[in-house]
Image (tube, rainbow, N blue to C red; front, side, top):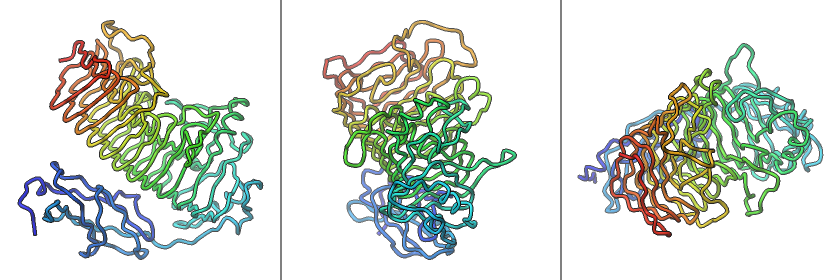
Length: 512
């Protein structure tokens, strides 16, 4: 029975991200109805037969045959059992079944004591287009390995790719660190460099095993040797069609998963641990441990994933200061949905954003003992524009007092152009230059948050370049302090309740 409720007649725009397919599965995502309160679940149809039911706006169709085309559409179902009009119909093909290259056939030995870098790299080099480099159960110690186009790195459940603790096992490379091209230690999993500035394509990292960068030991060793900046667990560069599926990535010496100049990236059911392990044990000797960082990258889908971070859970970046503006590659068209964040600082934009950031949606995510839902940070000197950012349908509960308001993080909802400045002067005007950033069209809606750590909401533009078009809608917030707003042109507040535990609920300064 089709519903008469107009909220469910809103077209459900169904897509399958370009990279989100294997030889046996296809992932799809869709936009929720504009008014979705009545939706109880979604039905997913494959070749006109119900394949499954879900409550989130993503679904992974499994059990499919290789190299076959499938028709997929969805319908929404209300609590009363009424079924919406069908979504658009999409046709998606699974990948062909490729050849498998088991690393043990190339001499890899499990146990975590024998260095297997050469054996694993030999398997990668031998891998034919569309093939899979297979890591079986067991612990396989390795230094830096380098992936190539048209391949899958598959780590079996019970398998661990464990990073060596020796800096000598990670050659020095020049790639972006904190917004600038700098000499760095290679990461545990890297992409090969393309000659002539070419690009790689079609790389999948999958399996229910683990990539453990051994960061607690490697951090100390790399910092002591100090020949370059710290490597990451995974660093993929200049690659199109990247799929991260079902994998656990943990204990990086720096940012955990770094995507530089990548396009059409999907992360589906990925778990990232940079602060504690899966059992809650704290990693030592690691700091600045972001979870997943898209950097001058576009068309990204992150869903059905979990990040427990020591730094930003997700940090969207695009270069720093003059160099970032000169490179001029933005991060754009990024969708983060149905994710769980369990420590760290939420979904951040910046502060290295000098190539620009636009068209980002964070929706249907939960934040537990996380300091902020969203931080948009663009201090003086960065330049460029951050625009068209939406955080919606999210919840935050933070009773962790490990962090409080400071120059790095000033609110559970946080838009801050004084980021990194301990003392800020909202009235002190400076000259507008190419380094003066613009932040506009930022929306927070349908948010419930309760934090004991500091400000519930902090919004601060520059006096010479105020924030533009900030929307707060349907928000119930409780904080140690309430809402503080400085230097805003065009601020819309609709159905917002902010409570302060210290009776300082609202503070506005030059906010219109």
